[in-house]
Image 1 (spheres, each protein chain N blue to C red):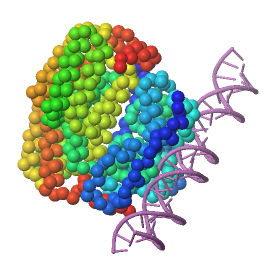
Image 2: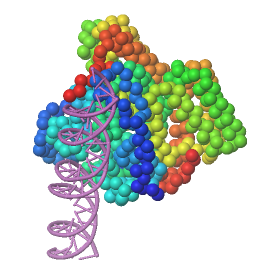
Image 3: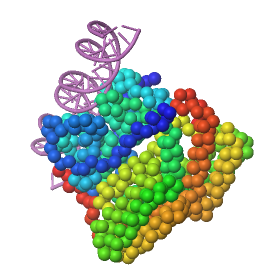
Image 4: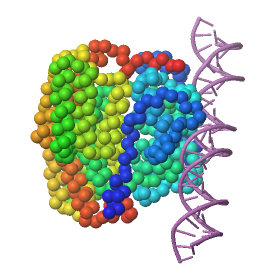
Length: 263
Length: 263
DNA sequence: TCAGCCAAAAATGAATGCAAATCTGAGGGG
DNA sequence: CCCCTCAGATTTGCATTCATTTTTGGCTGA
């Protein structure tokens, strides 16, 4: 059936997977011999530039130095400008007419909005996961959950975070919905750019609460209770957002409203 | 058509920004919609090309004739290619390495996925709307609902659709979340491109069911029952998707002929 | 007749060129 | 003293050009 055939090839998603390559390639990039998925300077530049901004190498509100980045990446302005247009459409930068690109400034308000969207996407993912998840995938999440609990007991923040993120990612994967995955990854990047990690370090109460919420999440997922899981996940993100906001209120002067130190 | 009307856009140039203070003063930069009034061939081409594709002027899977569109729009390849990159990132077209752009083919599977994402976004919008909506905005939705019911009784499909869409749009607006609105609009475009309108014409049962669901939606919104409304909205979209799928199974004619040019 | 191969033609991807706009900063006038 | 003006340097936006790559068409040979 040709229908299934043409569907089977779609595997394109703008996920910032490639690791940060900080090398300078003035002339030619080492082309992989037979790897088909690679070409176009444009894609390479797009991924690198996105990482460059998400990682916070440019201050919020600062100009994106076109000329500089060109020689930094060893390319001409054409592919760089193409990448800028795409990043602008993703909401990472602003393109001002005849005035160049600026790193988008993310205010408190927008962070709240982004958290809510993430909550909605995770809620959706949870609901779909309940419909489609396999026993193996569920078992994997259960394992991660128990690992996470171990890290929690040992107060191993790093391990806890790794498991936490892995669980949420698995839920999204289990939803098995390509547009959802892509959108989720995009918003995760936008939030990550704001240097936000709802750090439980300064808030032990929140940590315990989060752990309890994860118990509920696992329970709802085990029962394949879609609507319930959806609701829990949204509230989970809401609480995470609240914790982040509280932390921001306690220790301002991070990412969001920082002063733009231009070059 | 007037293809070279780019001059006419910048009719009057307003005051050239009194003392455009550089970004040294991050105190308050009111994001004025100033940038929207002026600019760029690129944005113009992007919007036009997007419409061109969404409206279905290019067959799915067909090559996007770069050269042709250039003279069609009266521009060079540079801005057109920039627009193509953006459209590719939006998922409207595929960019094949060294082989140009092709209109993305949307399969049944992807339509289902897109419907689910729309459901998730509407569910989120409903939940947020319950938190934020004003009495006036609610009253407006209530009015639209009753109008819609009138159209339903009169079997006025066109009027029904208009009210239906207006209601859903109002809910998204009431959520008052910019990233959500943008994402919603983007997915709506992607779905619209598939020429899908869950046309109730051929399915009177679905019509009545949809009307009952809208009663529930309004009721939950009146009570500001966020979680409940969220659930109803998702299931509403699910049923819409199902109706669309049933219709597609009954009359498979994808892409070629515009079967339902609803509104 | 038809598969295979090679050269011409066209298209793509990226670099460069150029006009217009913006930014810089020095000088003049109120 | 501060604000305004204006010429030069820089930057931006788009067009054009150049180097590969793909596609097309024709020819050879079985």
